[in-house]
Length: 330
Image (cartoon, rainbow, N blue to C red; front, side):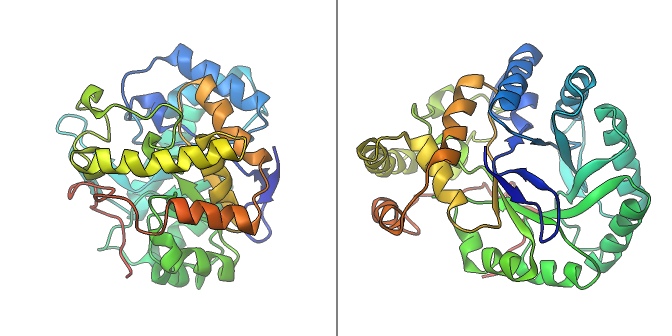
């Protein structure tokens, strides 16, 4: 697995990490044994960091990771998040970026993970009622105390990154980015590159649309994040599958698979790009990490853009409720 710098002068990490939301059932039921096998495969594939959050399964994802790294020390560094609150009974969510809440949640995350420091601590979603300068002040204190190594933000806009970076180093921004979610092309990728901030792409597989076997929305349970999402609802989904079939044919012509090619495309968008696909199976993880071995030429990138031109996807990536907290900028 090739490595890239996390931030301008940060540590080297594998260019593909493992997103661990799936460990908590984001895309359907799973179990800890399956997650453990996936973590073992991640080690074998050269992945050096795991991405999780305090609200993934109300701490379940962090707990599974904590139990694994206790018996497998030194294999991974951990990135986690705070700032998003979920009511355990109603599942209602809102945003809290005040210093007391972030400190309380960070301490809980450290205990669940069984570590004294996390390599990256992201603000999961910005609270519009808390100035980002005040949030940075809190995060810089965590950094001075040795509880976190780097500062990150998720689903923010370029103007927020500029404001935060004026206060201190922002190591990474984590936003959704893939061949069917290219909003960051309209300023965020460029701003990250300018400021020396890594761009960490979550859902680079389009929540499964680029898998070898496309998901069947009729099997989605209500706990599945994709349940009733516009892109996975008809008539949009059938139209999206027809487009993806062209991409799969292109991948086959290039001697590879659609998951590997989709992953390679994200990494080829810039040296500051890092990808964190989420999966709960070893088989899928191996398909994804194969993308690190592909070196795409300009002609390859042009062929991909022809098969899946900008704006090709039918339907929005989020429901109205899911859009809450993601900053817009265009």
